[in-house]
Length: 149
Ligand code: RB5
Image (cartoon, rainbow, N blue to C red; front, side):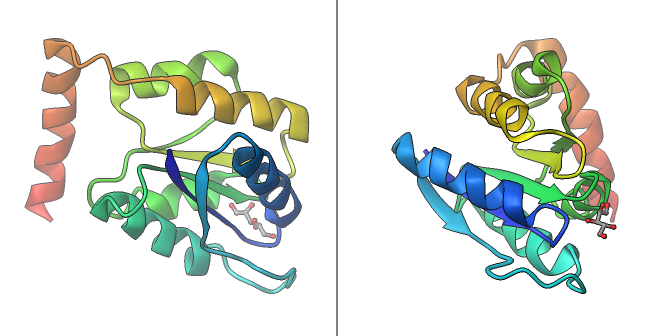
């Protein structure tokens, strides 16, 4: 799968470890930064370009990491067509895709350890949107909000 990743200083180390793992699994990974650790950097500078790439289809899915994952999730969800979720458990990692068509996963680099984060990302990537009528109806209601902007 063609994936994008992004992180600020709070997610920098975890993001880099995930990139190695994902490449090792054969995924094509576009890294939207940060490419070096800068304790003063700002998550929107990396997360928004990733979210735009998810929105345009340049990458199929994205993984964004900041300290808590909260800021990354807020920023990503401002971009049209992005359905980002802050994920800390295995159920939501796949159910968010299956029911809600989540296309960008946010993680807290100061919250989850590498092994859990790796499993969460694998669950996310293995999951597919089920596409049931009720799921589409709910998303359509969300999409209507975007078109009012
Ligand atoms: C950065 O120190 C931290 O505030 C940021 O990574 C993130 O946790 C925001 O949600």
